[in-house]
Amino acid sequence: MEEYTSTEMMAVCGANAVRDGERVFAGTGLPVLGAMLAKVTHAPNAIIIYEGGNVDTQNKDLALSVADSRLGYRAAASIGLIETLGFLMMGGRVDVGFLGAAQIDEYGNINTSYIGDFDSPKVRLPGSGGGNDIASSAGRIILMFTHDARKFVKKLDYLTSPGHLSGPGSREKLGLIGGGPALVVTDKCQMDFDPNTKKIRLKSVHPGVTVDWVNENVMFDLIIPGKVPTTPEPTKEYLDKLHQLDPQGIYLGKGQK
Amino acid sequence: MTEPSIEDKRITLEEAAQKIHDGAHIAWGGFGYQRPPEALAMELIRQKKRNLRIYTCGSEHDLDILVGAEACLEFEVAFFAIEALGLAPNLRRRTKEGKVQFEDYSNLAMALRFLGGALNVPFMPIRHMIGTNMMDKTRLRKDKAKVIDCPFTGTPIVLLPSVQADFGVICAQKADVEGNVQIFGIKGEDNEIARGSKTTIVFTEEIISNEVIRETPDLTTIPALFVDYIVEVPFGSWPMQSYGVYDYDLPHLQMYMGQCKTEEGWQEYLNDWILDVENHDGLLKKIGEKRLKELRADKRYGY
Image (spheres, rainbow over the protein chains, first blue to last red):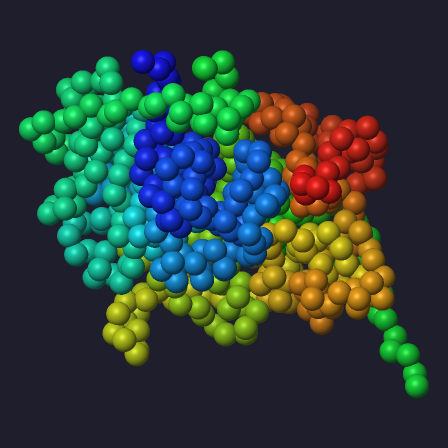
């Protein structure tokens, strides 16, 4: 059995959610490692797009910014923001988008803007960036963030990017073309969404994590199926490739493998 | 036959900042780590500008020093943090002090607002932002965005007010003295900003001749028709990057993130790197030949 960290587990879960040939919108950080890992393993024909303007990237070095010059090396095109978030994303030409979140609610609605009251916020977070654009129009959304009970809230401090809003039919009513969140990956578990209620549902727990622990670390009523499988452990091939992508441990952390 | 004359639109960095009056609304170019107008931000601080309002998709260290110096405290933006490194430290403190005002849009929304300004139409439609607090939570604008039923299809659509800012400021790799501009690598929202602002100022890493521009007109991303002033500023986006010219200065950014967590640390940074160096040439001297050479891009990779 391979040894692995919870960060590596998250990246591999993210990678496994990408299918071959898909057009993938990735931000920076762990999600992009997931997308890049998919491309060097089971999804060689995935096309990775960055909102800054680089399209179909094959970068050799990890990027810190979605606009990083590193992404321009061997990309198929370096264009503009209206091209990526407009023609491609709002045009309905993107299959999957990766997003992070400071808070999500039980419908997968996302806050990346403010913690606390809007009129006197405790913390100003980065804001939407392209997050709202991606959440609105990508075919499906994969959310990735470390597990913390304070992030799974009953009510968001601010709704930045649409999940399933108030349940079935609410996205369609507003003319949103994207399918909304499909998967949540944390360092403890994976969650998906119940097709009937569009509410978040436990999909699998990572090895060593109990269903009770997850249930106690979510501040809303989590749908828990009768039988919750354990997330398969990452293989040596995937872990090796992951570290080839991030040899300095920028996102994986130093000295973890 | 008479030769057409070539207008020389060059001004200095100091003159460019002098043109930007207190209270000006500025469409701010660059995207993330790529080609932000850092040298301008520093010069605006040296000239003690106040009450600026900045419109942009996403910017980072450049906006954070403007917030720290309280030159600009009003923003219509999509993103404000230092990607991969954390929340912007001065923004964090000034927000707690209740000094910063935001009007939040998405990246595409801001880019479309600039496009609307460039096309000289009053609004632009977007399918995004609908259903979120970006529609109903407002601070700076009475009319931030509106939802209507599309007059043709009946489905809901969001309308955004176009932006024609007093000034559009962007950085490029190459330009001639007349203002024909070549941007290499990604463009972000710079093409729209350059075409949609009342006065457009382009900061270029290098001046090339009009003859050279005319050898490859397909590389001109912004024709001189749209450009009012040209400023030659080598390393004008330091400590961030300019594709094909130089890379970002990561140790400097990391130092900034650590030091500016406190007001004292920020004041020290402000003095050391902005006020005490007197001007951009002084800043380059302080960074040093050796370091600048290290940051220069390897032409094979672009960084």
